[in-house]
Length: 307
Picture 1 (cartoon, rainbow, N blue to C red):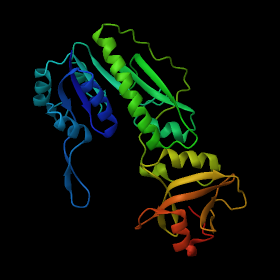
Picture 2: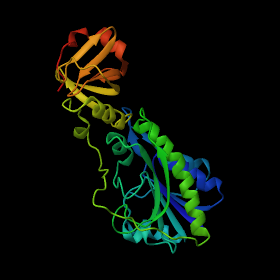
Picture 3: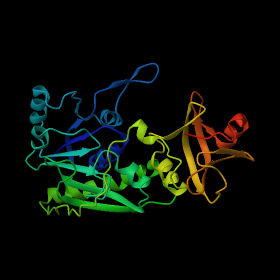
Picture 4: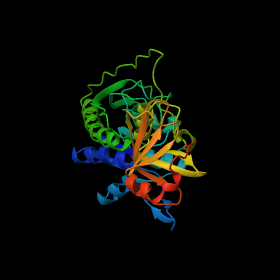
């Protein structure tokens, strides 16, 4: 069974590695073009490309997935199946090309959390469980029949980063199980059952990451963890952006909403209910620092109201 793999970030590498090590024939790897990154604008290769280069895989990096030349090159690979993990939306001419179809791995228990940011939103919304789903691609995004699902627990201190790493591993397992089903013609996909109450996972923009201190502390705790390590929750203090990396809900409830209090090397911020204790943060123009470092260097911010 000849496979074309499509993916770009680190999340997809574990799946590519699993497919490679399981002995499947990978005839092509499609990933994002190299891009300039950082202050020096150094050219950066995707993590998927780096793995593919290390293992002498055939790599294609189209800028336009509808480019006739790319379509022709893809067709020349004569893949039986395409596997898509953390990649772009595909045009029908691409996903409908292989005789066995195109399989996608999504980091949620579909039909919940369809969209671009399922890991972040699961934590922001306080879910106790997450997981992965594999399905065949069709016209509507994340709507195909489910082939394999695997679940995992979301811990009380889970961040988007730690859940990402869990799902990356179980996603690779689910993908290998899926490919074995396809290889053995043992595919019996289950249509997604909709109740009308499904939660969505839209793309997260900078303005979406601003903390609303009028929320209860437990919800702000989830919000901060759901945006850690990226794109990071933030607020404003004295007209400067303050990024909150790590914060935990506490039972303290004697502060005004948004009030920042520095006490004994600890940072507390008042919420609608109780308050948040911050242990790692970054003020605009400065490096990431601990709560103690901030408390020692920014005593003049004591009593400020965050906005």
